[in-house]
View (tube, rainbow, N blue to C red):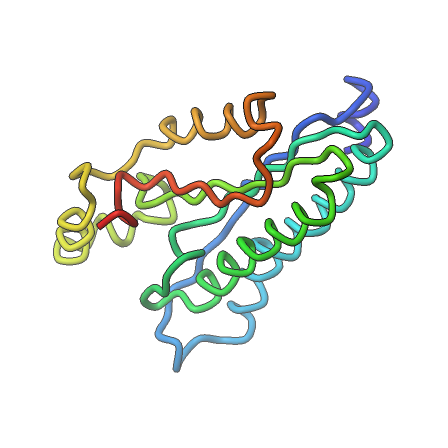
Length: 177
């Protein structure tokens, strides 16, 4: 944050995009895996948002965009800490929006569906699981990471100045089904 402010004079937009996932049945899930996911996906997002807001509040403007997940809306299979962290991130997005909207900071989230990323490699490589996922996506395919850009540009722009606390699904129609 300090380097950004020193270089550009201010911090206008924060995108909290870091995230990790660990897969295991809930009955076998370790505390170390739970903590690792929660620390990156939820704790880091909160404290980066807090640090950004401290600077944004002095100017009365800023945009914070969190990267949530479809699992902010529904359960999941074999990813208990990821599901909990992304559900928590949706709640955190709404809480921060409530606190900071009147002070000029927009806090929103993007909830990607099934995209071609490292996090979905195991699902895409499992023919049965991949086929089941694709059968439910009305668009009929996995998303491309570049397809998240439009939502990010919207939430970072003045076009979203009256949008606060939204968790915007970008999911090929998954939640519509």
